[in-house]
Image (cartoon, rainbow, N blue to C red; front, side, top):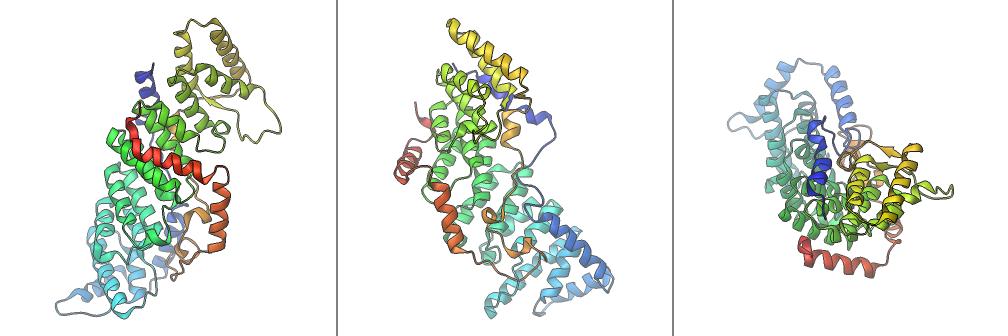
Length: 402
């Protein structure tokens, strides 16, 4: 039987610990943005009071002056108070309007504005701006949505993350960059955190759409596998793990696989998986041979309820050997799930504002041949037909599989 109380305990340990986030500041471009912002503040040749007084003149009655790019750059770097951020917001609307009328988009400010709001901890404003159809051309890069959704994740606004994904799904960005890896991770993480059957249903439909279009990161698969375990659907959890090339080679997916096998009454297979950590082969591609202590504790309770003496002896032996070889870690499955992701340039599909000047000119074109090679490499581990069938199964059956 499913050890619901124990499993719930292991998956909720983090509420008593310091929060950790899915993406590092460097991955989101916040580190470079902060460096550039401080440097620009030092170079300003007028006082901040003089600068903001001049910015307010843009919005005097009957004043329709164009917003200069340099002024918006400086405003983004100097804004700190509520009033100053409000001025920046108004400047964004006018700058976007004049750019569309002139059909000249000199700079891409969308990601930079989101980074400013991220640093200022303004999730409501970030959500309102990215949700406004009038600014759909302003926030026209996946990184805008990544930074916004990350901010919402930190503020535990999980339903808002789903809403922002739906905005992206219906935007022009979806055509150029369908299902970006960062948004896959954030969307499935929001579903995992919500931990409801409705969230699982949405997440499985989302995952089914992803796996027929693009490579799916292991973190997103792990999130949905863990969510299926939470709502007591080990069958679907197991099937999602089987989408990975070798789920037994990673400490997180290995732990989830043990949980799924145990809940499917396949304890002998879970123990066999643990035994593989002891018989280490130096030529093995596995990057680690660790297992979480919470997984072993849950398996121990399940083994204790069995009458099969052979299973009991095997588990005790492998448990002892894992302990002697220091292969047991104290990190919980939830901590492993929510550990920060270090995005690589190819997976970020990043704009130039992450490199050098965070307010650099627009250059969002992607290397099509490189992206195609990555897509082919990541999907080579399983046939398209199997993936398509499983995607159809996930979408049709959802979380209600028996």
